[in-house]
Image 1 (cartoon, helix red, strand yellow):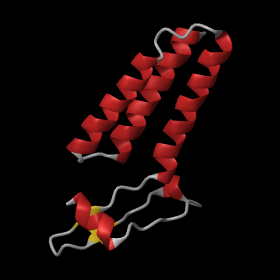
Image 2: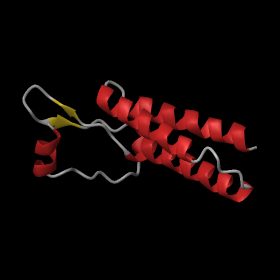
Image 3: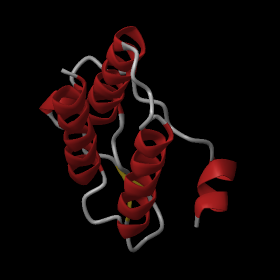
Length: 105
């Protein structure tokens, strides 16, 4: 159970980040590295209950990334455009403050 489900959760996380951060090389690279780091940190976990908990956590993270994160794109005029897809229906939109946006550019 452990290896197959863990690999499936790993691949699902990578797919979720590829869809969510498409076109954003920095976020793609950073999210891939973070996913890899977390899975490597737990590589030696062998207890069934702990493996099951970690796999469930990865599945929840994948769902969160796909359904709750929307990538804002900066326009030529300096404003941002957010285009939620059908996966985001029912989600709450949190708009970052101008201060946070300035720090990210």
